[in-house]
Length: 364
Length: 211
Image (cartoon, rainbow over all chains, first blue to last red; front, side):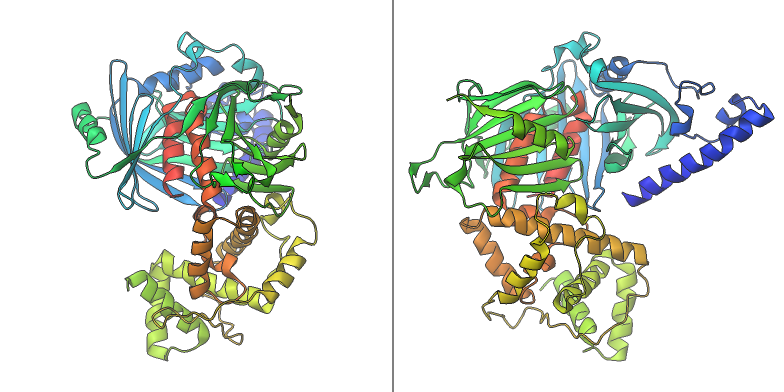
């Protein structure tokens, strides 16, 4: 949002003005570290003075710490997501963990009432107005076993982490970590990790110029809350009076469907590929029953890109290319290879979506 | 009628210069205390600007979001909007959205930057909404939504007026197809989502407003 950009910009200006002064006077930077927190980029350079008391960890160690925090803590809080365009969404969160089982309840406070319950990768979303419950399996936690074993070496080729100082979020002291991409194919992140537990309490998604595209944070958080797993489990099972919908998914591979990428997009690997029935698409078109949409999903370890491929003539299209940006999520609709329409969705720069679209190749 | 809708009606009346001084003063007090009311006030002014042709694309945040559109898109869009025939189905209970072009007062309690931000966003939404909307022209659900929108919105600016400043929901509502793809992406994005539950929280919260 504009205020965040403005604040950062101002901090940078102040720091640029201060640093030569510090050097000229021969002041020890530690004197400044004792001042109120100043998580600014100016102190991250290789020549910078000693940093505030932030653990010296590498990218994978930071991610592991943040990841593990969620598997230890029970908490209740209010979570807010704000996009650079001014959109603001909030939800109430209950989180509890017991051994290997993580449970979560997320009640949307913005927009139509909606309650999402998660037990590890099982997710069910209640839409009380529609009396519909959507049950799905998020391909998720545990999909990156390397992280749990101490780090994914490939990730360090794509991103680097640097400590930025300390700050306070929702009343908690937090380490500020900047995760910068090493190329232009992905966004950067600034993450606030609660000092004692490592829990992520705030995330900013940053574009190549360091502008905040979207930020998500706890506005209020209780880390000592009592959350009863049995109660969440009961709620998750209480589908009485709801029509339970399951996504219409068939596992497949891109190759089997006749698709490939001429050359890979740096760092992105296939995560999954499904034939997906779409409710909003007519199942019978002018040329008879239509094929399901193909969803081909890639990840670089942090960001995710989905390609949705379908025949071009399924729906009328006004333009050959349409682009839309919503916070960190970018979308691109594009006609490819004449007969196909691909919709790309991802938390990556629009340029990366274009690369995927350009590299798409029909095998048959 | 709920209070928000009633307020919007009053705001529309104020913009049209139909309220007497006492009612206008009361409403202006509400505007300063109520974000939703202030946003409605801005929508009506934005709609008026569009009707008068005072609103131009290219400023503000639009440049990045309409990259895929040809340079004369806005010109053609305006021409199309000018030709658009809107069925005169205006239930009596709904606000009369006719703008009074002579009313010039700015909301005294709204700093200029906020106004510009909202105007910029609304223009992004208008273009984006139309862009995606055109993709799904045959979609019955969407057509239903548009008819409903036409009933309450001044002729020719439906895309602007249904876009609620401050979020991207309007685009989603107008295109269930894109909404569905975004939901499908988020489901798959559980695979990484920053490799942490915070990514899931973000997705679930963000998604929450799109339904």
